[in-house]
Length: 190
Image (cartoon, rainbow, N blue to C red; front, top):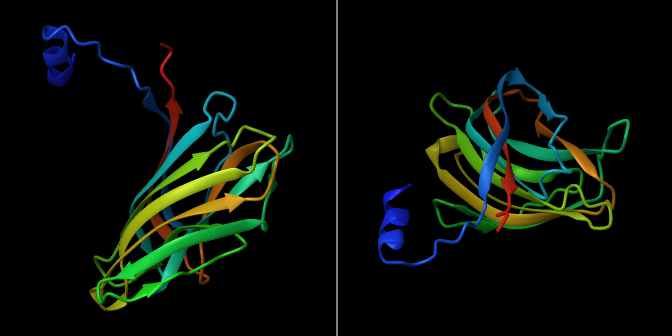
């Protein structure tokens, strides 16, 4: 039992089980144009967390995007996405990049040595065929000129069918490398 829980136990306070993240898969991209996770266990988990770390790209300014797979014989959805977000650069410029062919995970990564990006991408209702699939995300990266960029936002995929897979892809005719982990959120049984 973690020390914080032990302290609550000693005080006679009830500790709520709020659920936990369970690792579904970890994959490593190595100079790839895309990476597919074709089993997100959408019937077990209604909420997913995609963690991208140490992401590097071969073309300066390339971004990382998310598309979804759906249906019994998986079909890749290439349209119907909307994004609402704010990108903040170190020089304090604000912008609102958008995409309709995918959901944004990391908008802009520099390709110089040592430049990389990382993101957390939450996906909601992927296994619910009566709702659109929603996401919220946050990333931080280094762009050309070693400028730090962060972006936060949300996305919606206008598709009321079960999403059963995720494609991580890079734009700008580039390749990407890095680590990708997918977790499912398991709600408390109490």
